Structure formats: C-alpha cells, structure tokens
Amino acid sequence: MRNKLRLLTPGPTPIPEQVRLAMAGDMIHHRKPEFKRLLADIQTGLAALFGTAGPVLSLAASGTGAMTAAVTNLFAPGETVLTVEAGKFGQRWSGICRAAGVTALPLSLAWGEAVTPEALRKALDANPGISGVLMQISETSTGVMHPVREIAALTRQRDVLLVADGVSSVGISPCPMDAWGIDVLLTGSQKGLMLPPGLSFIALSPRAWAKAESLPARDFYFCLLKERECCAKRQTAFTPAISLLYGLRESLAMFAGDGLEAIYRKQWALTCLARAGVRALGFALLAKDNYTWGLTSLILPPGMGSGPLLARAADEHGVIMAKGMGHQEDSVVRIGHMGWVDWADLVAGLHALSWSFQELGGYIGAENYLEQALKAYEEALVGPVPAGTSS
Ligand SMILES: *Cc1c(COP(=O)(O)O)cnc(C)c1O
Image: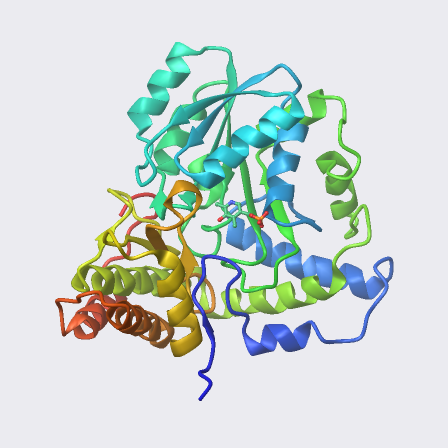
C-alpha cells in the first residue's frame, strides 16, 4: 500500500494548501494596479520578516541568484572578501566570487563546526584590505548555525560589509537585519517561506546601498539599483514570477497571523524534538556546537550508507529525507524541519529512520526515542527560546 509522502528535506519544503491555491488564480498583468497592490502587500510582510526598514527586493531566481547579485552589486573586480567556508554553501560564496573576479579569502573550517567571532576578528586584523565578509547564517550542508549577530558587532565597527545568506534562516530562526547590523540579508522561496523554488529576496543596509551606488553596474539582470527604483513604484524591472508572488502573499499572511515569535518558538521546539530523537536513537549529531534550527544532520555508523537507508525510508515508509553533501554524502543524513512541517511529520521521520535502519540490519538501542523526542518538544514549547545565533 502506498504511504502518504512527507517531504522532510532542507529545501524544498512542504507547501500549505492555502499557498498552493493562491498560486492557482488567473494570470494578471504586471504593469497594472492589481500587481502594484500585490507587491505592496508583499513589501510589508517581507520587511517584517527581514527586520528591516528598507526595501526587500524580489528576484526571479533561486537563492543562488540573490547570492550572485550580492557579489556583483557590492564588490568590484579585484576587491578582496572573506568567505566563511564551513560547508557546501560557504564554498558557493567563494565560487561566485571567483566567477565575478572578486578575490575570496576562505576561512575554512571542518564540516560540522561553526566559525567563532575570535577567528573572524583575527582574519580581519590579518587582512586589512578585506571589504566584505560573506557567510551563511545557517550552513545547510552541515546543520550548523554561525554566530552572525556577534560577527555583525565586529563588521559594523569597520569598513567591512557583512553579507549573510539566510536561505535556511529567514522565517526559521530570528535574524533581524537592522537590529543586528547585517549589511545584506538574502533568502530563497523554497525553505522557510513555504513556497516552490524560483524566487529569491535580498535587502541591503544604508551603507551597503551607498557601496552599490559607488560602483558601475556590471550585471544587467541582477541590477539591485534598478530593482530598488522599480520597487519604489511597486514594480519589478523584468516580468516577475507572478504566480509565486501570489503564493508569497499568502505565506506572509500566515506569518503575520501567527506572529514571528510564535513561528520561531515552533521552529525551535521542532529542532529540540529532532535532536532529542536522533540522540536517543543513538546517532551522533554532525554539528559540533551551534546547531541550526531548520534541519538536523546525523552521522551514520560505518557500514550503513545514506543511499539505501533513505531510499527505504522514502519507498517503504513515505518519508523523504536528504543525504549529506560533498564528501559527507554517504555518511550523513539531513532531516529538514523548516517551514510547513509539524511535530507529527517529524515523528514520522524519526520512526521511518529507525525502521529503515533496522530493516537494513542496523541496531537501535533506545526503545523510547519517540517519548524522549516528544518530551523535548513539549518542554521547548513552554520554555525559553534562544535569541537566535547560538543554541
Ligand atoms: C538552499 C540554500 C541556498 C540556495 O540554493 P538554490 O538552489 O540556489 O536555491 C543557498 N544557501 C543556503 C544556505 C541554502 O540552504
């Protein structure tokens, strides 16, 4: 018998029914008043989510599009930036810089570790020519959260722009950009925002805008100054992904209805559920210290590959989870719990993991892992929620 399918990957994430229905409406024209109303509604919701007084621009591209726009609009060829490479997405920053002629100095860490503010301060002191720090808030390939708030306290005192990839953070864990002093915050549609892939969003601080204004435009499609001008008139420079924006208005209404605090509490509690369950099952967590809120990554014991395990969990038990990335593809499993995921989905995920593991000959010690996981969830629902960057 076929199971109901549950998508527990760290992007794409499940989409609520009301968001799907909102995307099914008639097409409208993007230079007419109705579109301007749509964009106005979206602006308000996005600004609240980003924690910024400035405009949040929508680009028709996946998350990497906004990452690319950040590099090409803020740094000239020949400039030097520091990239925090603690996983696949950190490496992506260096790759984008390379393609754009910007020199990337990687601050490399073992996969599973978070950068420390001290290490970052040292790197900045040692290389006074650095004009930007490019990093993830949450490194989705390992499940680590970097201390962006503390790092922003360093960069805002210097002539260094802090560019934060919040693709697996915005709408998942607190990252108010103005309050923290982040210069560029960006995200994509297919993770915390509960939408299909295809949109990315980016916001700049006043000093980041000043930097962008000082440079000649070098990208026709991703021109943030042009987009900002259009955005002020409730327009986009090019034909927007109209249907996705209808979905976005609905998902932002859900955020506004629940309130960000309640959303973060739920995300935090789900994180506690997943971590407690994974630990009780006897798996080691990949993240060494700072765990991110949107996913939990675990290390498989030798002899058990992620491929057969995840194929079994999906085909036999209906739960789709993700492998590790890069050199950890075989040895790591990543359970996504960002966006439209609830406790019941995660209980299904843990149980599918345990079942599949045992069916393939693995030994699971704990019998009461679901009780332990749910207890952690219930405690987190009423306990204190961490402020965001470290947990
Ligand atoms: C998913 C993700 C991205 C975006 O990848 P796309 O495939 O371009 O949408 C970027 N950074 C992080 C941290 C991510 O989790």
